[in-house]
Length: 292
Ligand SMILES: [Zn+2]
Image (spheres, rainbow, N blue to C red):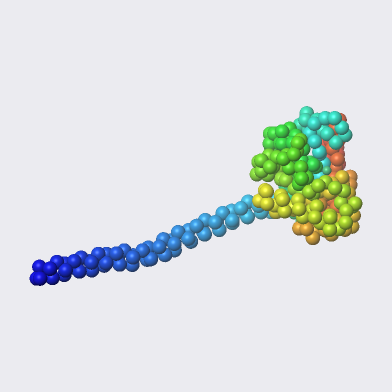
């Protein structure tokens, strides 16, 4: 009996010790977990916040060195379509190269959409020689032909893509747009279906503008801010709807330099046609840069 009692007592003690250990372990666990969380979480949060701050800083344009202009600032917005040959909308690659070389050789500064907005709303320009290069319709040759030349000369540009033609024959692919949008070539909206907006009802117009904006916002992780009217067609309703849909500016095909007195939703552009020698191109660009 005594022996059995002793074994029982030892057994009990063993249970108590083991239970104690496991209790200790359990007791440590909850302490450890919050400790880990409280250390790890703020670090993660801080990193994310820091990244957000950096991105915002990168996006912010420093205009402290820009030149003030008294009258509404005027800028030439160049309008290209396809970089190829065959019709009056297509500019051959070598002609395009000669135009870009002329801009580079003559010390021109090329604008991003954000910078163009600041020029037109703050009446300040980065240099006397400032230009905004744009392409309509998003042809694939904008990537294969124009993009390498723009990169070679260190020039920025904007492409107005048609939402429903992404990844379609002869037009830009998602990957091409993603690559260019992180390399100084911004992708903006040329609506979803490329229908003439003045022939649509207000709700149809809104759908065309909204659907493409949401598509590009999501696909390129950006705030798509510029709209380009298909075939340059628009009416009074279009101007209001473009603003309501969240665009900051819209471009037409009305000829000449752009300025805010045209209205930020009806900006003019300079059409670049094939067969234009560099000096002729130069006259078009420089003749409009200061509004004369
Ligand atoms: Zn178009």
